[in-house]
Image (cartoon, rainbow, N blue to C red; front, side, top):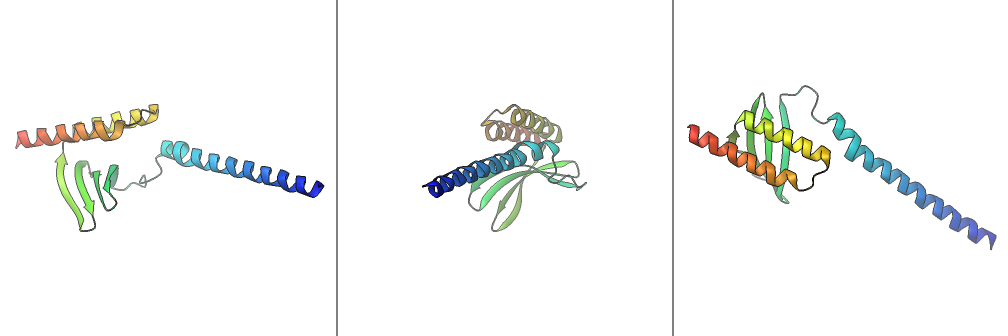
Amino acid sequence: MESGLNFIWMMIQTIFALAVVCGLAYLLFRVVLPKFNLVGSGGNMVRVVDRVQLDARKSLCVVEVAGKWMLVGVSDNGVQLVAELDSESARIAEEELSSARDSGAGGFSTAALTEKIAQSIGKKREGK
């Protein structure tokens, strides 16, 4: 009977330890590392600002390349330039997106960034 209780106690300890490790991993990847912005901070000229998955094999990306901001489509067929964005509008949208993510506002990124991109594309077309 005592060995059965020892086994149950060991299982409870194992499950608790697993929960602690998973919680720490979650905090590390979702809270700590994004604050340090370690991904892509190696002084590269190319930076993916945001990415929206359209389906399993297609996505839209906002990319900053040497100070120019572009909206590109990525699929199995390659990468295509959709539009060049107004740098100032894109920078403002990125700041708003970053502050919304920091404050925990859910659902902001897709709607607000899409709106800012649409405004930026409209301004570019009017200016041409």
